Length: 113
Image (cartoon, rainbow, N blue to C red; front, top):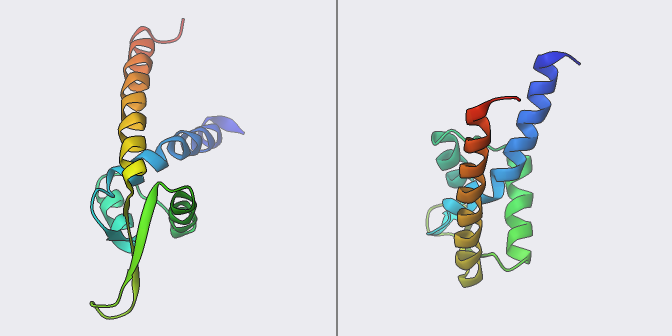
């Protein structure tokens, strides 16, 4: 497979692990899908439509997000935001991420042993 092929595959796995947290971080207020994609991409986390929209639907079905249709700005758009449960979950996931980040940083400081 080679280093580049392995890197691409493993980097994708890393990104998959944080895409939920990244999306939740941008949904403190109502946003529609394209706006959310743009916000994430502008911050260095591009997400494909084929990944984002199923994720939003899944999170809504789990009660993490709420949505509403709006038609006031032209074509109808579904806007998403965190539910009350979603806000609690986001805080817990963010805390877990910070702990993992700190642990991995400590492990990386020593390099491979």
